[in-house]
Image (cartoon, rainbow, N blue to C red; front, top):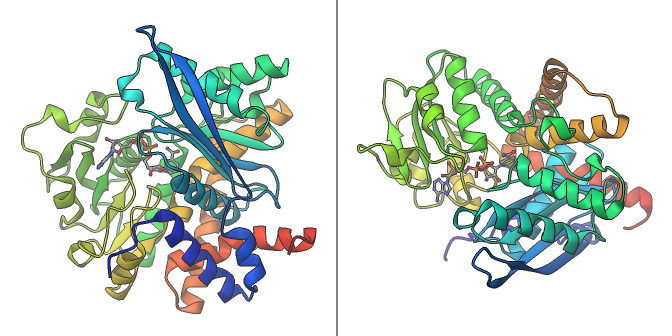
Length: 414
Ligand code: NAD
């Protein structure tokens, strides 16, 4: 039988397993197996050449039993309705795992910002906010950056919403520039959270960070900051990649040099001749492998060939269900995406809290609070996994879904 690469249905399967293990009946799964709301919009943009192009965008709100929904907006040619649904469900799980007062959401536009001018991207960002404005808001649903969106795009979106609302509304969106109410530490937060998970997983496996051999797939926001944190901690980053290829040096790559040379889309390998493929990168001999690029990278095809003893998922959905089983059977410790990449939404939450109170924290305060959240989350998930003898993905889903399930039960929805 062909492997299930559909993120939405494979997410539903694990949610069902988690709810069964927690003792909920079928009614709870019926509630949580799909987003409560799914909006599709069409956004007309007058392009620089004077022609009109109409883009399709989405906003999925998985569940708001706990509180307002929260989740990023991605600009990517492969955005689809199913992807939005799966990503909104993962946001519910992430918020539950790090114990935030939110449910999950996700948005996206089918477009390729790499082929668009800044002027066109600004019009599209503003058009998207106008199209979804009835559906979102600081106490309803709070967007954030995701793949191929950044703090500049968040600033345009916040400005558009504030103009419509006739109030300055920094709490409408997170991931903003600092001068517009962004939080210290937000840009690096996902990588900080992944770093904490890498360090905790290494302790569990008796691996010293100093000298540990790390391979990172993806050199964008998550992957590049992570590479920096790892090399600062004394680890040897022996492989990195982007969409065009990968670099490998068993003695450790010069991360500061690569950071200096990468472009704003996380591309750097095109500057080098001796590259290897992304597939070869994943199979390199190393201690810790961190997929930090895109989904479905570790599959039934290559899971047998992974040589790392720890895999920490910084990307969303890089490992299929079958590959998860193969890695677990081989004794590889897999720290799942919904836990490992929860640092971003955690500091987004801190940003929203600071916006609401109008009082701003130092980077040290943010990092300290993030550290506490991530360590507690890692310990909770690891304890459930070891006491129940299940893999960390199922354990993370159990920890993550419980808060929303309980909130829905208290509200009398199920
Ligand atoms: P990004 O756009 O900044 O960087 C993506 C990187 O992946 C780039 O280096 C790009 O070249 C590379 N890439 C793209 N297609 C690829 C392919 N086919 N093969 C190999 N590499 C490829 O994105 P990001 O923000 O770093 O996000 C990376 C992953 O982490 C995504 O799955 C995202 O959902 C997840 N994530 C990010 C955040 C965050 O705050 N940035 C938070 C949670 C999860």
